[in-house]
Length: 87
Image 1 (cartoon, rainbow, N blue to C red):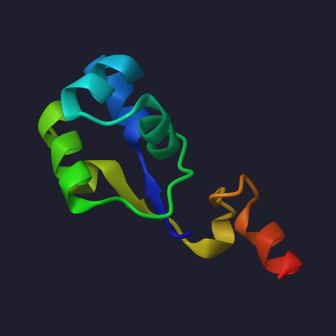
Image 2 (tube, rainbow, N blue to C red):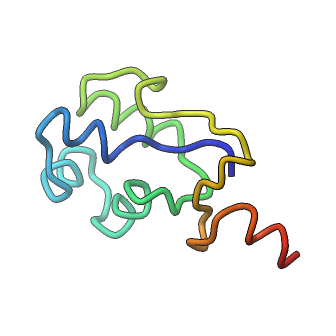
């Protein structure tokens, strides 16, 4: 996956905990944790908008494009190079 969600960094910057943010945007702790740990395959625009509203930021503050060869972790916890070798 070439898009990384920088939610963990923004939460630290804003001093928001997982439980507090989940309550503010009406999302389960489990789903917010998936987003926070970059395990999500997709993010709804409504969820992205709620995150931006709660964290007082822009979508670009939360999303980052990373080249595939940089080996960021995908949804299964494996880096892209390992996943590509298994396919």
